[in-house]
Image 1 (tube, rainbow, N blue to C red):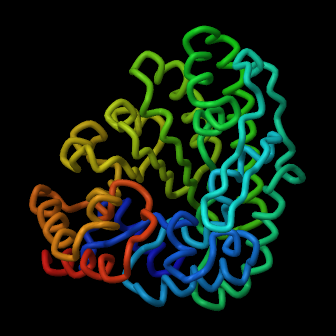
Image 2: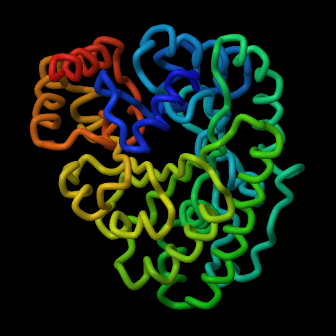
Amino acid sequence: MKEIHWENLIKIIEGEVTKEKPVGFIVDSPWLPKWYGSSIIDYYADPEIWFKSNMQVMKEFPEVMFLPGFWAEFGMCTEPSAFGSKLVWSETDFPHPNKISVNPGNISGLLKPNVRTDGLLPFAINRMQRYEDKIKQNDCRFRFATSRGPLNIASFLFGMTDFLLALAITPEEAQKGLTTITDFVIDWLSLQFEKFRDINGIFILDDIVGFLGEPDFETFVLPHMKRIYNTFNAKVNFFHNDASGLICAKYLNEIGVNLFNFSYNHSISEIRSLAGDSVTLLGNIPPREILATGSQADVQASVSKMIKTCEDHSRIIWSCGGGMSPDTTTGNIRAFIQAVKAAN
């Protein structure tokens, strides 16, 4: 992440209104390879392509805050690989992990991986280490330790349906499994903090929390998320959930989250009323239907409408409601930036 963007992010989170309205996007492997002109598998297999594509997007859009910045992920496979998931790769499609068990009752016997040796985790760390000096030479730093959240990881390991059934049918066993996964997430984040001293932010992604009602959220999500964020004294506690965010929004302060990316199905004012004034919001035009496949006029109209509906522009980073979707064009990103500037 660029130093100036990190500094601005801290100011925004602290409530300062910057001179220019900030624009930020979550970018990773679903979008970057095709935009850069490489295959998906080359993006994962060739660290030079990973580095150059991340550098190119910053040069192309110098005014945009890209989050988390130089994300050394392997799609959804990173964390499940440590638990022994079979990983399925393709030249042109996104990789995916296969579930490790067809029996959700096995979740209570889940063993915690060693984050220093297991799965793809050492490769992610190695890629970051190999390019840290080059990244610093370009006035950037690794600023975030990243991980999928406990429920997200569990849904890959046991299958979405079977895992959600386990929450209802065998809640005690499910809770034991989630505790093990949470221990793993904390170990994984801790290793990133240890290896890269400039990290001062946490980025957790977990859409599965949006599938739960409030009682289940309080039982199966709240204690684990609080433990993750409270383990570290980070300046930025970033959470992404672009499924339904209404349940989790009102718990963000209690969890310790101060930066939230949410679904475009919820307005900024709706999330603001639930999350309170202390949480910085990142959103929220439709990432696929507008930013990726809409016309430039559609993008500009959607951005203009979004900004006009917000009376208070403090603690807002203008974005889309989720990560950057595949096929989002340079022209549409420029249209987004221009629309934000025009609203100043």
